[in-house]
Picture 1 (cartoon, rainbow, N blue to C red):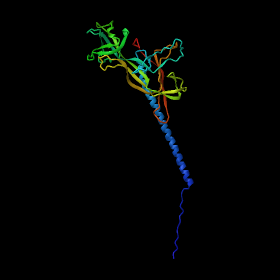
Picture 2: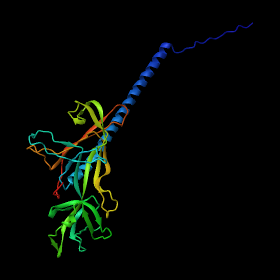
Picture 3: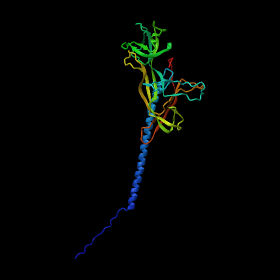
Picture 4: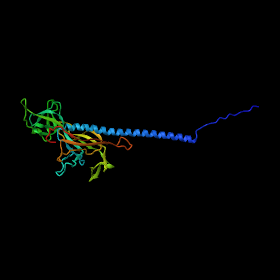
Length: 333
């Protein structure tokens, strides 16, 4: 009879305490990894918001600065009157009251308008066909109704309402709102022909609009008398966001240049978004407290609240300066 032996081996495993420690370590490492990932995503969103705000405002600022430098008229401040359809853009006076001191705050506005040269120098003659018509020798550079005709030597200028003779390469018959063509008197000669130098100019306007005021206990606006009034940052109840810096030009409602229409401000393009300053334009004061019309003061900031849903708001104050216009051909603004 054989005896059977049973060999028993010991089986080892993790205890509850060991498993608990391992799970805790993995959880801690996972939490650290999540925090690093969350921090990276937040920084990425922050950089995206900052870059978007900077880029939007920068491009608009560069274009606007270039155009103001090239202005040939004294720039005018413009407001927005939404009580009419379509809205109108009245001129806002930049002159303070006589009792205002040089340290007073000048009036601010949502927009600024001025003239830029579109074509010239050209030459004007009396049209030999009669009828008090004038013809501008402008070659292929034809005027568009809404442009302004400027004759610097005679101190004459007016908005063009109609232009005919477009089929003639050498000249264009120009008609203006105030019938300037009937008042032009030749006083210079060239090769035995009476003439004067002329320019076509575009009246352009940069305007901040389309934004909204948002409740913010640390904002820079208060509501007073139905209007939002700017105060020191951090002392208001509202902030402005989502504005657009838009470009407008004076144009005619008539699509046919030879048919007179009504002149109006035509939207051309949006040159910057996310604007957070509703009235960035003003005319700086000179040492006597009067407006220094050689400059336009611009305090333009941008904020992008839509780049992230993590509560981050990027603000970029990109421009706080006086921009000078460098030449003047016009008598009127």
